Image (cartoon, rainbow, N blue to C red):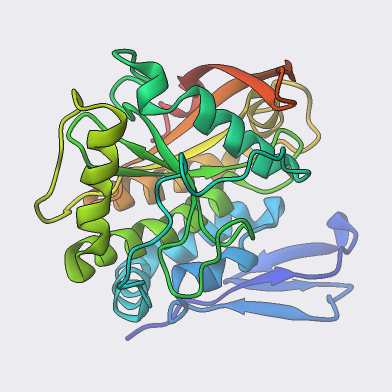
Length: 301
């Protein structure tokens, strides 16, 4: 097996003194510590290694070259829950407004874009019919409300679960990190559905409760769509709509698109969605509206 190595810096160094050669960071001023990104790592182990914008292009290429190994190992070693999980948030939820911005956005989206609230309306046509839950712990190590869980769980027209990975408007994290984290949950979701049985029973039960007119899927799960979702402010920065600061380097988008397409072939079609955030509603939650696919990314993915 040929291993491909990529590295990320933990300390910032003057950009004009630094460059990347063959997956290694080198330069006149070497960083004090380098964190290796290995193809033997699992998706959730790679999340912390792909947060630097300047290395997004290299990281996409490293992951793409070893995607089969990463995928297979992530599936094999995923420690899934075998018992029922607190999926029905109409019962298992607090009325208090979360102080953490991302948790507040999750609750706001769940309350306004839930299957029973939407009725016959579709949240994102061709992507997700609506939301059924949030902060869903799939793996044994996941913990609801801690951020170590599926941010939002949706359902598509075929009745299959859709994994949403959310970022706040001012998040400095890269779209690649969003994708890798979503993949870590989607892989565990497919394993939990196909091998445990608990989730395979719970999701149709909840969908039937929220909206009996939505299709149900209770067979093997071959595809798990993933959605990287963030306020328009986040995508304005990543795409350079609001200036150069925080913009994803143009050279990073093509390999990112290659990685997205490779994920689709493996049963993880990825979509990227933006939405608008307004003032607080009567419950103190932010108002959210106009959910739509990020059109600028279509030419890459």
